Image (cartoon, rainbow, N blue to C red; front, side):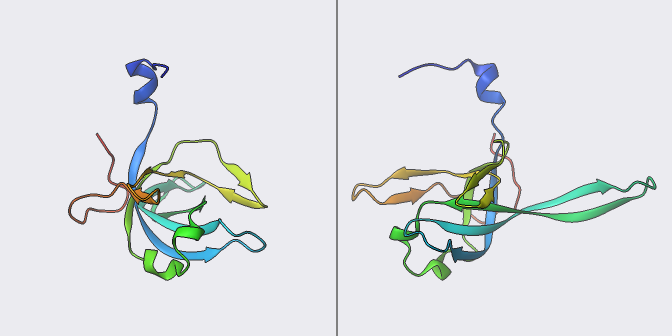
Length: 124
């Protein structure tokens, strides 16, 4: 195991996202394309006005083999690392990483809040 400093760890932004939509990535067996709600953000327009907008991100996850019916993931709240550089996977841009651990049976187990929280809630 290699260690990271506390300052390096603090750079990771981990937030709760609510899965709104999930579709298989064409021509793959493992990938799902998820639209994930991370709450509201304030956008400053070129004219100086501000508006509130939903922070919906597309995140690609290799979990399709464990969720043959991806619709069961709709409205699930899961932890994500949201400040990773975007990455293109099979032609789809991914803007975050799903956090899970290996279950006893080897299947991924999502890290989830104990009770529902607002999308975009920050882990601290």
